[in-house]
Image 1 (cartoon, rainbow, N blue to C red):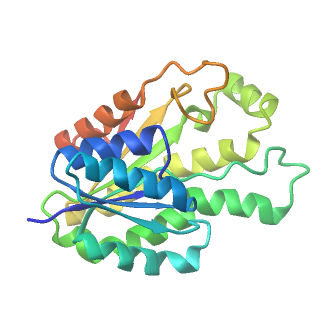
Image 2: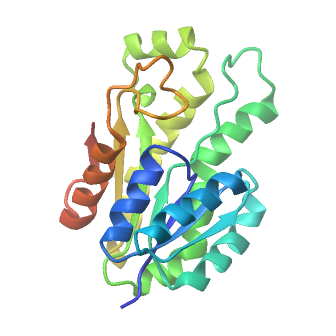
Image 3: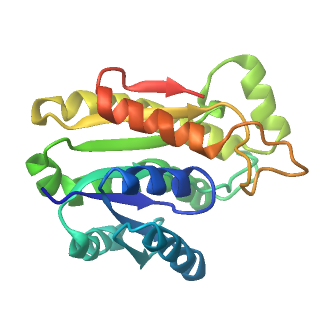
Length: 228
């Protein structure tokens, strides 16, 4: 049976490694992000490995346009898995940012994810092993030491967004259980090598390690959370 993974927020690092992993396991891969050049390079790299892939440029902060993007991605085949790797990094200082800036960060973490699941739900319900997979970061934690880091890094907005996304994963997992749609989250508590956050070689986590963790969650379908 044909199966497609919709990768939202494609770029170097985790999403690229997940695309390669799932593609090698027989998935067609639909890539979504704003950067058309990056998408094109990603498609070529996957096709060179024999993976069926296509790019669908879109701004995932534009909630009203998500249903159309999902419909276009269906051209590769029914969507049986989603990777939500998109994030927005604004609203660093919650007391000085605009309400629109904060709303945008929260929308990408939650509202846009929900809209994507809604749009893909008819396909997911019919899929053999449907799944919604979510990338999250350690700033979601309510540990006072982590809160101090969020403030010192000027990353208050994404800290709140990650916390909301963490809760959303649990809610979706419970809500979609009856439809046998697996929902799982990998929390990345560190810097992934080769990404924009890897400044001066500070990255300690291999993207492939995260991709392998996602594949394990997808296959085992037991725990809804894992950490690397």
